[in-house]
Image (cartoon, rainbow, N blue to C red; front, side, top):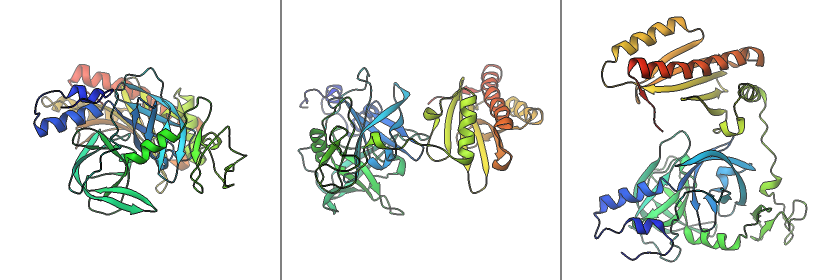
Length: 384
């Protein structure tokens, strides 16, 4: 196979005449190192890193309204990333990432034209879901919408896949997964990569500047060129990432974030979409969700999983603990055999004084019980 200079993926697949199934598996496994999970107070999505341009690419609608977002990836610690560029017209956004990372290079195929019926792979990795990949074919290589051509395909997408890469059978990025038709049967749309390539070339990455494309005249405006909040070329109103107002929770959400701060957790790194937070306490992962309609706040600590054998002693232990631990309940997730320790609070009873004791109780017991279940009862540590 011809090797593309600078593309580490090409050098990885140098076997002669690889079998199609093996090749697809290699492509999917390789991109696990490249895709990035993205979370904000408003949404969750996917991105992918381009080493040549030193940016994470995602959709604009995934990071809209944020100066910073939470990112995490394979061998990439959870951290905050700065929003560098917003493009409502093409639904593109660029995020920062430290230069000293181990994410490999990938190849953008902005020259070749895809054809109807050509096989493709859609990849996503939103927070809260496992790394996903779906196969499909191009249904329409020239679907036009608002003077932009999209690839229409039948690879299954969910909202969390937004911003992830669309790949061809060679493992080259040919598009950015952008949107799906609601209630459609696997009807997805991806922005062809030549739009991304052109935007990357137009965008001048400056250390101190953020930028956005003017929706009116399509020129890129920077912090150093904007006139107040207006495009210097056409006068249309435009808001750059640096001008975005910081997220401020209100009501019950504000109380929850106050409690998380008081228990020693970084709230910005904990946000996982609307009224949802994820924190780590020792070896336990705790998901906190506020359901506005019911007024219920649920804290679920995912501890470990059941073993295949000798389960009865674990059930006996969990039932006994349910009678002894105040305010907390053990349960088993039947789909994944996960052992979950839960806290339930109605919002009308939540305040900082009582809430901090309840949250501390959940966090401490979560880190306490997973050790006992694994070391004394043979449960299995959870893996990401």
